[in-house]
Image (cartoon, rainbow over all chains, first blue to last red; front, top):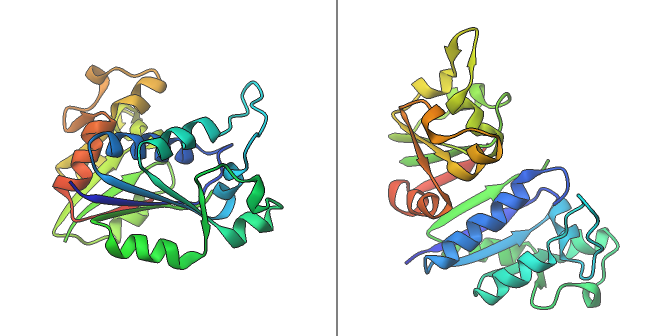
Length: 119
Length: 98
């Protein structure tokens, strides 16, 4: 089995890339691979807990919690997240907060890296 | 280097691919990129399909856009997410997203 590091920058709303990364991470974890996800930029808006799921306004908490339970490591860029007015206590339990070196370490130890850029 | 390129868009990426050199190039069509595998413009298929014999398209994204596998160009291998994970780990050393 291998290690897959995902870097995800696009926001959850308005871009299908975020949704794609969730499904790819789940598929890889289900096949026994070790998966890490790093969130930067607008993707960090998704780590705030208890967001209201409106009709077509999706939120990620349910999916991120499921990935955490599969053993996927998820980390949000602390600077990007705070810059969007989200404080650590408001985060989804289990999602780590760290700075870019966490992502670099994940990349360095991974067998495959997929960096999904911003909008 | 064996390089797999994720193409997630239908319009904005063709020239980028022209500048990529790889020993073995793979093009992995996801999201709106799957349109390259099914649409014709002025009767011609996407020029992306002639850049490499290693072509893949994600079945979920085809289905989301109303296409069935039999509508896909025969050069393109249709994979699901599980198959895509195998492509990433087994067929290429590096992957990139454009």
